[in-house]
Image 1 (cartoon, helix red, strand yellow):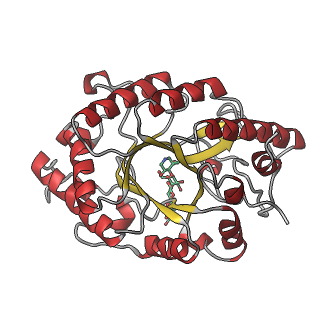
Image 2 (cartoon, rainbow, N blue to C red; image 1 turned 135 degrees about the vertical axis):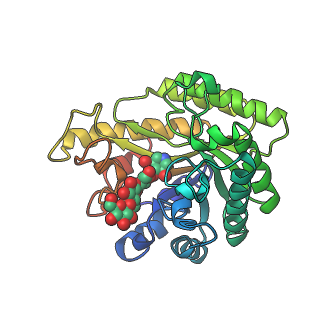
Length: 330
Ligand code: G3I
């Protein structure tokens, strides 16, 4: 019998996994029940699934995951209400295909937030209210992504999203979530300044979500620590929302198999990363892996199609060296 990951970290933070609804049975369900106490929908709670056409809501996939979390005393992260990707075009367009006014877009956004959050009221611990709204290269936007949301509504869509989410479910923790926060100093600074500004204005933000799609070599532990140090000084909660650890350092590499050497290197790095998260467990409330096991990961399709072994359990759902290094810290 192997130790339970969630039990090992019970005094520090929740341990989560991203799942598709069809992973809630068999061996996958056994692993989830034993090792995880938080779930995130990998895809089925994104706007394109929840509201594919205006006014047509589909909560089937999300409900399956929600029911599983309730049956197994887990919490759930809501991912995600407002995003530039996996969002249908109708949000931004009128019948003729022209961009809608700010007023119309914000009404549609508030309606989406309202219907979705009411449906899951009381069942979601933390919502990713806005996802990936920062993009350092876009100077003329003060570091905000120049998405359709931004083009039509400016920074107000971000503020309105939080204000409205807080109205609908004041009990849920409201997160701003993004990638490369643990690695990119420019992005780190923009996020810090943005959250600081929003908090000063009284916008109800509870926490910052750092996705954590990192690799076997970078970023360095000290770079990641700078982000945790800086964000925790804001006094908000922090969560690692999408952790995985690609075995590749660049886009040109491709391995046929997962060697013993790679497994050891990955395990060593995972152990250092969890050790760092533990040091910040006054601020970090949840560490979620972006998948259950190496049999299913978005990284086998991104940035190129290739094998990858980024998680703690292998393709046959057996605990990897990385798992052991995380549960038995040295
Ligand atoms: O469901 C359709 C299926 O009907 C169709 O036949 C098939 C053909 O391509 O596509 C299926 O949709 C795919 C979907 O995953 C469900 O499997 C999409 O092509 C594929 O692009 C989509 O990828 C997801 C990606 O977000 C989209 O942006 C990944 O599974 C998901 O892991 C990934 O998750 C994101 C987070 O939400 C935000 N942070 C980054 C993270 C990784 O990209």
